[in-house]
Length: 211
Image (cartoon, rainbow, N blue to C red; front, side, top):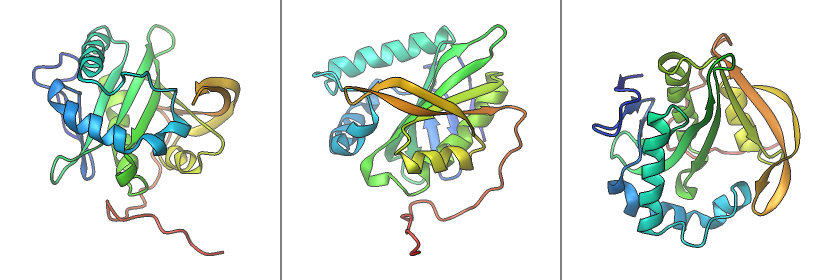
């Protein structure tokens, strides 16, 4: 992983390089690609996300989003990134370390989304794998938490392959798609062993094996 600048963004934006992906802080120049990918992926993402505000995909809403991102990073509250494919800088999705707690906690929460055309092709696994050294190393976070719906099998597999351990079950943990829903709770410690890498070509779709 190569990291250029850590907290003092956005000039220039932070870059984290992973296996076939690059993570970078969002900026206004990303608006068109971001809005197009989110709109294209609306039906795909709706079951897994909070209800989108009516004007969520407008330029003004994105501008406010970027301003909030910059403020949160400067105040050490959250670290959002967009995910790009290394070879052509195509926007793939995003992920965020949010709700950073310092003091005796040294903890943050991981959230992520992937555009529908790029899901199931290994990009998010590569992005999470690139982000974890930054989180545990540069940010000094001892514990990274994540939660996902019990029905979201791909997300469960992704977290477990990245070394997250299932720790519990949160009843009505988050309001997703307008409904308070139970979630599986995961966490990864900086002291946890790095899981073995199971490489496959990035961009290749996952094929389900017959039983």
